[in-house]
Length: 305
Ligand code: MTE
Image 1 (cartoon, rainbow, N blue to C red):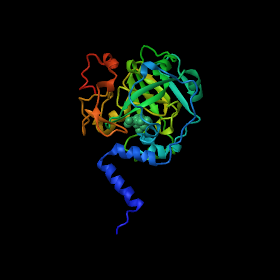
Image 2: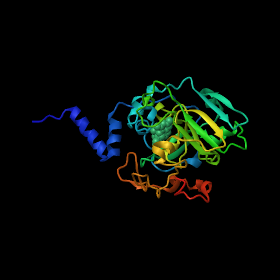
Image 3: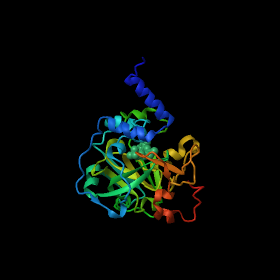
C-alpha cells in the first residue's frame, strides 16, 4: 500500500494552492497549523477612533502577519514572515524633504513620541482580489506632512521604501526594481483617511507588514501602501512609481483606486475573497470609502486607473 509521506502531502498541498482551489481556507488552516507568528511589543496610549471603525470581522493577527506581499523579503505569500528577521528596523530614519519649508530627518523614536496613536479599522483590498480587515495603529499622514509646512509647489508626495543588502528579494529575482516607489497627489495624501501606520492590534508592526512605519491608503489597491518607508519627498511633478512602470505600464497607473469596473489585464476586479472566507464578495468602488469621490470629480476613472 502506498504510504502518503508528509513530503507528498506537502507537495499535494502546494499543487492545490497553485490551482487556486480553496486557497484561503488552506492558507488560514496552514496559518493555524504553523508555529505561532511572533508578536511585537505593545504600543502605549493607542486610542480607538470610532469614526474609522467597522462591524466587519477583523482578520486575525496571524493571517495579517503571515499572508503578505513584500517583495523585498520574497515573492511568495509566506516569504515575508519567514524572512522577517532580514529587515533591520533599528536604527531607522525617515527623511522628509523637497517642497517643504521645514525639511527634517527623523529618528523613528522621535516620530513615535511626536504623534498620538489611534486605532483605525480599515479594509485592505489587494490588486490580486483578496482582502482583509486590519486594525491599524498610526496617525494621519496629513498631520505628519503639516509639520514640514509644504510649499505651494508641493503637488505630489513620493514615498521610498527601504533597501537593505541582506533582504533576500532585492538581489534581482523579484521581478521589480528596488527601491519600491509609491506616490500620491497632495490632496490624496492629506485626505483624512490616509494613514501612517506603526502597528496593528495595538502592537508594533510585524516586520513583514512594513515595520517600522508604512503607508495605508484604504481606497486604493494595497500596492499603493508602501512599506518600511525611509523617505517622503514632496515635489511639483508626478513621481515614478514601481508598479505603474512595471512591464511598460501594462498593470495599473498612478491612481490605482479600487474600482470593480476596471479589470486587471488578466482578471476581473468585480469580486474579492476576504481572507478566511470561502465565498467571494462584491468589490466596492473606492473599497467602500466613497468619501474620497470628490478628489476625482471630473476625472474619467476608466482612463485614470
Ligand atoms: N511595499 C513594499 N515596500 N514592497 C512590497 O512588495 N507590496 C504591496 C504593499 N506595499 C509591497 C509594499 C502590496 S501588493 C500589498 S497588497 C500590501 O503592501 C500588502 O500589505 P500586507 O502584507 O501588510 O497585507
